[in-house]
Amino acid sequence: MTTTDGQNAGSSIRLERVRKQYKRQGEPAVAELDLEISAGEIVAFVGPSGCGKTTTLKMINRLVEPTSGQIYIGDRDVTHENPDELRQSIGYVIQSGGLFPHWTVERNVGAIPRVLGWNKSEIARRTDELLHLVGLDPAEFGKRLPKDMSGGQQQRVGVARALAADPPVLLMDEPFSAVDPITRVRLQDSLIEIQKKVGKTIVIVTHDFEEATKLGDRVVIFSKGGHVEQYGTPAEILANPANDFVREFIGSGATLAQLSLTRVKDVELDTVTTATVDEASDDVVTRARAANSSWVVVVDGQRRPRAWPSIEEVASVPRVSAYVDARLPTVAPSSTLQDALDVMLAASQGGALVTDGDGGLLGWLRIGRVIDIIRGQLDEAQPDEIGYIEFAEAENGQPGTKPGSSANPGSTAP
View 1: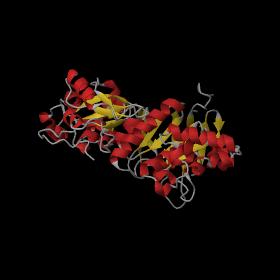
View 2: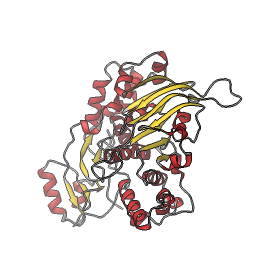
View 3: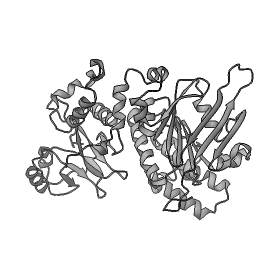
View 4: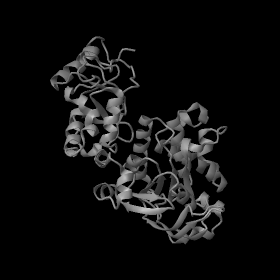
């Protein structure tokens, strides 16, 4: 089966009475597991350390051989296939990308297609296509070595490499755990946007329940021995934990976890006044004042935000500056409200700019709007669950301004 753009669509995964018993261990790592994953879904495996979630993931591509049972991808029983050929047909992403350090980005991405005998022009076309898909310019990054890239960029290359041979299934083993929190949010958002375009079946192992509820169409909560305590949508699990184990695993912060069910795309955004580099400042100030705005967002030719100066800063120079503010807080429509709040807090800003999958500006999300929604969701929460957002009482709606302060960290001054 293929998608409308000719790519392979996701395949279902079915595990029947799958067991993994390691030698010299009394209890099996995974005991008699039955599990079915629908084609095109993202399913997150989560649970305490040693519960068998990573073992289960690795049995799907037979990096770990099951002791007994059958594993089906689509209608194929893959438990008796050649394991090397099986792994070439399944994408696999690990922490830090797992890139070959002495190979360039384009050579890393083309690794499996080369093994499969693709010709050079096919590999080059596919490499360019995938680097664009994960948000990296092939002309800028294709010849780089992994050491010359950030952790987040390396992880994007790892995803591109895993998708290179157009596999129906993508396995991800804690892929975002080695990057900083802000980069992690952006990588999560990127994965959601990529999945909209490629429609693969994705299985992701994570130790973070919040990440599981954000990424997973459905979530599997494992206990020791690969026992499935609950398998359902994030909303089902949060609203109706199956038992005491699930309630304890979710923890006392379950109310805050509800924030992962509300996305930025579900919230009304405020419009912003935009300006372009080298535009006459007087024109920009006039336009901003007419819109009753005290600041503007400077965008490039693709409407990607560069800076958000106040109108006083714009008026201080004849033309709009080309300065790029690397601290701009941005979130994607697929970001959760928890993500958005974290980004705002980390940047000490009164809101965040919302950008699409290509980085184009969609609008402005005020912290006050987020807090109003959070308060509605936390009506029955304990005081300590909302204490860290109390500062928002002083929120004044201004970007680049810490509530209660007149300082503007969003200055465009170099």
